Image 1: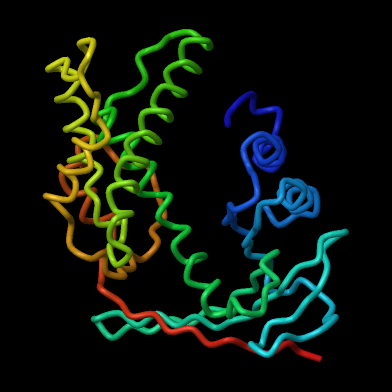
Image 2: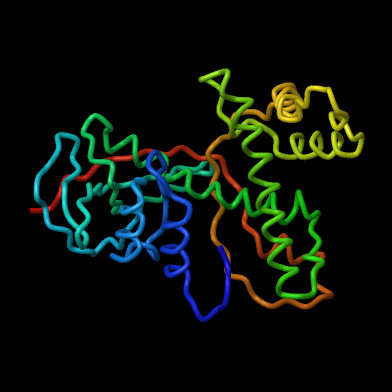
Length: 270
């Protein structure tokens, strides 16, 4: 969702939640969205949430499930609080530990706290979606429209296209429970869809249109390797000379390292 800069991200998040969320979904969000209005808006839709809050936030202990989490409240919403210590160790020997405080409306004790921490870590995969929108679909080009209405129409077209391709990839992976949908190549799926449109395949009357099946078969035939955990050090963006473009990339971006992740659940402080 997008609009004037006079409204902030949290206001748009609450509006989007009311429009798009329903029971059976789970929303992952960072600390900026941990305010009471946003949490109330998400919970009111019947969807679950899993949000990180600031580490010094005081959340009273009402009762304690056996997995080390505890039940608390934010506003009128009953939540399960998970305090954990996450350690990332990279292949170059670097070791970094950070404390996380997560809240979720998933209160079912049969879902261990440790299982809820992993999906929150996967939240960063949304960056891949941004890359696929800007680089794969647009090819690195900017939007072509020059009017506000045209920009809005073009953005929605991009989002609908992206979602349709991702649904086709996910549907292709449903037949094998052991297959991670992350192994489906977005580039392969998008190019297959484009080929079908260029060839005008399946547009004649009387034929069976199997666009999703065609995309799915192409994806399954060209699976990516299992995604491994990697970390990349944060860097500070700074203005550089246009004449230094050839060296800027190596100077501004640190190397990527394969890594292992360990999680420890911390019991609540009395």
